[in-house]
Structures are given as C-alpha cells and as structure tokens.
Length: 530
Ligand SMILES: [Zn+2]
Image (tube, rainbow, N blue to C red):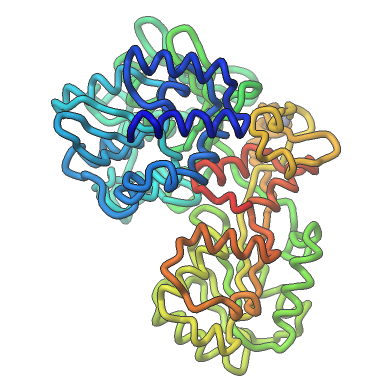
C-alpha cells in the first residue's frame, strides 16, 4: 500500500466523521516519524474508537486493500506464526515483503507484542488493523489448532470450559497440585471448581504486587481467600478474555463478556467483568444459572407480532420443512420443544416429524423428502437463519427450496435482559454514529453494571430474540452465486427481512435487552447487515 493509499484511508475516515482533521494530521506526523499504517497509528494514539473503525473497515477493507483482503480470504501465511499464538492474539500474517511481515491485527493496545513477534519471526512487523470478524474467519479457516482439552471454542455462540466430564476423563485438579507452567485455562478450571466446592458464586481475581488475591464470595457477604502466584496473571487473564470474548465497549461501563461452564452435563453461565486496577486488570467472575422468563414460544413471540404471523402463514399448508437455527449455548433444544408445542396449538399440526438436529446434507435432503405431505421441524446449529440458508445452498438443496418445500428458517438467540436496578445509559449514538438511526428508543440504550437483583440471585435472565426467513423469500433467490453470505444477508435485509441484529438493537432501544449483546454479535461475528 503506497503513501497515496494511506492518505486515502485517513481522508475517508475524516469524511465519514470518525476521525477529526487535526487528529489525522497528528497521526500522519507520527507516521512520518515512525512509519506504520495510518489506521494502526490512529488506533495506537487513541484517535479513533475501535467499534466504529471496525464497522467502517468491514465495509471498505476490500476496496482499500484488495490484494490483502484477497490474501486474508484465500491463503494467509500460516507458516509464519504458530496457530495457537495466532488464535490467542487474534492476528493473521498476510504477506512477507523482503524482511517485512504484513500482519493483520485487531488492536494497537500492546506495543510489546509487536517487538516480541519481531524477535520470534526475525522480520520487521508491519501491523494492519483489520475487523475482528474477518480475522476470525481467516483463523477458523486456515489456522488449525489442536484445541486444549476441555476448552471448546465456537466460532459463533458461546465458548465452553468443561469443568468435568466423565466420558472425556476431565476432572479439575486441586489448586495445590498445579504447576506455574500449567495453562491459564487449566488454572481457571481449578479456581472455578474450588469456588463451587466453597459454595461461592462470585470469584474476584485481583493482581497485587507479588501475588494474585482470590476472593471466593458467598451470598451472605462473607468471603474466603487464597493466593496464587503472580506469574499466572497473564495466562489467566488471556484465558478469560478468550473464553468470554471481551471487547472494548465504550467508556461508561466496564468490559464484560461471558462463556459457559459444563459440569458433568450441567451448564452454568460465567459472566466475566474486567476491573482496571493499579497492578493490571482484576476480574470478577459470576457463576449463574441461565433463565428464560417466558413459558412457551407463544409468550416468547409476544414481542414479535410480525414473526408470529409470518410463521403461521408459512405453516398454514401443514407441510414442508421448518428449521430452527441457533448456535451453541442458546438453548436450541428447549426452543425446539416449544416450537413443536406451538405447531400443535396454533397451527393444528398434530404429528409433525421432529429432528433435534440436522448435520449433513443427506439428512436435510431426507427431511425435505419426508416434508412433501406433512410438516417437519428440525434444529440446526448455525449462527442464524441466513447462515443456515447459506449452508442449504452450498449443500445443493436449492431444488427442494424452489419446489416450495421450505416453510422457513426461524433464527433464535438469547440475550441478557436489561436490569432496571443497575443499568447505566450508554451513549452509543456518540460512540458509534452509524448506529444512531437504529437506536430511536424513548430513553436510549442501557448496559447492566451488575447488582444484587440481576446477579445476586444466582440467575442470568435471558430474553429470546428471533428472526424469520420465510421459504417464499428463499425461493425467489437467484441461483446461488459464490456470493459471500454477508452480502446475501444485506440483500435479504434490504428486501425487508429483519435480522437478529436489527431486532436486538430495537429491543435494546426499547430498554429490554442489554445493548452490549447485539454489539457482541456485530463485533465478533460481523453480523450487522444494515
Ligand atoms: Zn442489576
């Protein structure tokens, strides 16, 4: 990328209002002094907020640097970095130009990382800021990584830390038996198991000068303590950040994320909050049961009259296949059972064929076949309805869709409810101007800080959010081109199909859902579709 191009990105950012003119001048001066790309310099100097920059780059990356976008999509240099490291730090080596390595990264937060990498690769690193969703796609596709035992990283949905699983022979080890060389997630597993043993639902990990202070809190306000070696801070913080997918999300509320814990078949949510301290970030870990207030699908759909009607319309012929798409950790089985009840009650479908999960094209094809004269309903583990449609098209299943055998695809996700006792207003319109028009709620968007009401009772209140892609819309699709799913999502969104993201944003604007939840979808999975 030549100097002209660098100026171009800067100019575009100024024109779009994401960067001030004088801030750009500062970054350009810095660039003249130290080299590096303008996006990286702007971020390093804190002259642009990460969220809006990611959205902007997601839109323009391919136009700004077509050659690098192509490499990211088709074949980065997997030989230049160990896969585990690439995953940990979320970076992708793109190209080696002589002694220079062009490296796609998501942040400029850690300058020492770049010099460490230069030492490791013996190359000069040229970091390029790239939206996390594009990096994630490249990592998933090209950087095969032998997973750590008992850590399930899912591209979409929630990550899972297995505490114990008899079949896999996983059990937490006693804290005193661990070595400092054991991994951060191994230590985390033992810390959480220790908390459960002590009947504590809240763990505070606080780095002090010479040790990490671990407080296991109990509901009565009492706590018991122990310490861990200070050297573990990096590894544990990294494991928590990776598992819970924490992101910088505005200045007014703490950084937060969550993941799932599996304990002999039982699942708990772990909500992680990072609290900045003098000796590094402290972390609060709350272990919570997930709870959905609504009793059945009719209640869940009360807030979505459009979807309920479209669903009933799609099912009125009492034949065809209805898919329920939800990612890992979003209670797909429970919602599927509710969906079957809904079909019986609302659509008079007495005896639908039910498949808990379709995994292969063959299974899907069989279901389409069977759905010729009666209703079939099946779960599918995909990010959303659009993703599922992509999969059907890639599996050569356009013919049954064209023949009208697809009733539709219901996409579902569970988002944390807004807590009226502790929520704090998040001025998203100021931080991410491009989203302002989606946030025309009565009193703006809120994020939970966490209080006795919403976290203290040991439960995490979840709100189901839906999208529905009717079979009639899918039927009208052009024959599948090698079009990226993101483009198809945009196209269908323009045709009036409301995405999970836009629906969740509307619910956040209405004060029902914590606004950081749809943002998570947007930043981690690139599921905006405006
Ligand atoms: Zn609360």
